[in-house]
Image 1 (spheres, rainbow, N blue to C red):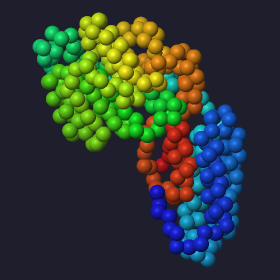
Image 2 (tube, rainbow, N blue to C red):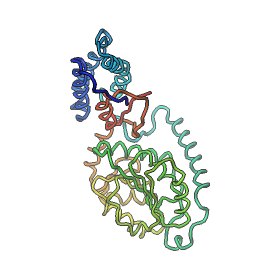
Image 3 (cartoon, rainbow, N blue to C red):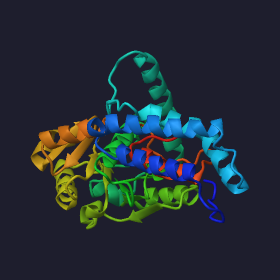
Image 4 (tube, helix red, strand yellow):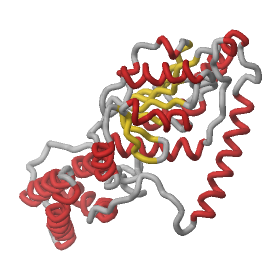
Length: 339
């Protein structure tokens, strides 16, 4: 964003526009159905005020003020387009099933999974440590990247619906060579993994060392003894143990430690069968809400469906600092400005 200068006296029109920006940002933070009408009115009033700049408001005797007002008027179309994308609020399902274009969607999903399966084969050691096999651990299993990202995007929308926007942490239990751990890194403040097999852990650390993110960590440790599951917002596990009793004990440990409202991505049938008994309500797909019942999950889904699909903060083209309150409120709602 462009820096603001304070070496001039702000004009009446500038003060008025700033006031309308703050008012609009406040309405965007209201629940969708409650805030829809006030937000649309605030948008129209702000639009009229900004468009009036082109009718003479920019002709300020103060050069700094005139330049500032011109930048506001020129950038308004991008802000207006951002607002149009979210007003009126529209519910979008967390998980799409079928519908027009589904054949193409499935084909692209297959292509992505084929590529990531090959990448997994290259990165992950071919042999499992014999001691790990004897202990009942699975080798580094490959799981559908498309399905994982579908669940991850849904989880991020739910986090925003819960009001969790900062300090978010992702955990991969049995992360192997780290592909899913790496995939989650752009979307969380911290992305961490647990891996007990020394060979897989070495491969994972080598991959993360080359990654362009500074928020990654891999612990070579036994997940069945890990004591800090409470510190994470989203926990992913894909059947890390082959023995049913040990797997159930691990699931028990994770859920017992997890805070209420923590999201679990568990894409395997054993967890689906145990979820309700563990006190985990299904959100949809392979996504579960810890320490919740079906009614609580349904209420959260109803809120999350109004969160947009922009789950990663992107810089985009520079915008005047005037728009910061609207941009921040929109980001919390899952919307970002276009280029």
